[in-house]
Amino acid sequence: MTVSLVIASVTVAIWAYLMAAHGGFWRGSVRDDRAEPAEPATWPAVVAVIPARDEADNIAEALTSLLSQDYPGTFRIVLIDDQSRDGTAVIAWRTATNIGNQKLTILSGRALPPGWTGKVWAMKQGIDWTSDLSDAPEYLLLTDADIAYSSRSLRRLVARATGGDLSLTSLMVRLRCDSWAERAFVPAFVFFFQMLYPFGWVKRPDRATAAAAGGCMLVRRDALMKAGGIETIRHALIDDCALGKRLKAIGPIWLGLTESVRSLRPYPHIGDIRQMVSRSAYAQLRYSPLLLAGTVAGMALTYLAAPFLAVFATGLPQALGALAWLMMAVAFQPTLRLYGRSPVWGAALPGIAAVYVAFTVDSAYQHLLGRGGLWKGRAQAHASGMPQ
Image (cartoon, rainbow, N blue to C red):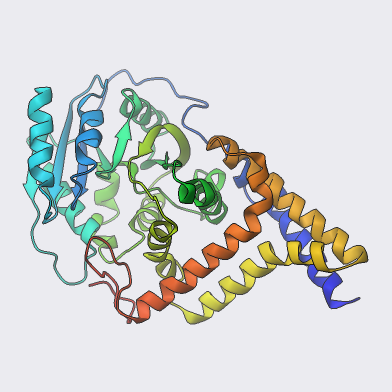
């Protein structure tokens, strides 16, 4: 058996496994608009905790969407202004005032202490504020300052959380897909995330797979306290998945796709996509050169070998390479449909994957330069692997 035939056979086997036995991740069937639970008889109190650093461009629309929620229970918002330099807090207060809504409280964020990432430290301050309330909320909506909600989003989230007695209910928000860079790379980002953390496995108590999407996480407050509080993930760059892991040890969690909650953050150029990925990709690999090398080799075998064999090999290896290429293109289709992209983009998945491999290598390089986890002027991970 030739080397090319072995590689081709392994590649087909990989995609056969991914499509048949990897939690059905590629179908994108775990969504917030399917199998909706009944609404609770009594609506629990909820506080939205929003860390915000230099979010002047997005905060008005994000806040307006939250202040306009059709939620029957008590709902308040605390925004932690994380030492913004662009007037984020002023715009936030003006937005709430113009709406005539009294639900918003703004805290001035304290200086970042050693051993914490910026977002988690800001969330910590907001969560501590809720603990001092006379009527502490049953649920915390941990969300970002660049996320917009449809008017019934919170209602649906809480219904799912209470109906399933969930410790964590999270949505993979709909990312922007307008610019050329977004259209080329955003659907693949969602596809790869689902492949890493099959949503069907996340919700299963008998599976260790745990994850969340940081833009929208509804957390049962007592479960968070039982897990040790947000400080248990104080150093995590990928705070959402770290929190998902902590809370799945306490009780069931759920993560699904949505079209009713969306990100406002634009990625107009490929460099913006690169920064988004490289900020945390090496942290995902636990800052390990060996895991980096293994990831590069694995991605090459999974995504790049098939088109190479389909174009340059002959006989059975060429046929198997073409088959594997077709399988990955088919697997990509549900995500492409979700984002309104042409099915033809399925054939481009190997090339897109190659670019993501380059982003991952760049993440390791940035880490070695002391710029790991760079976000809004903060490099949050040193070469040692610990955050600033």
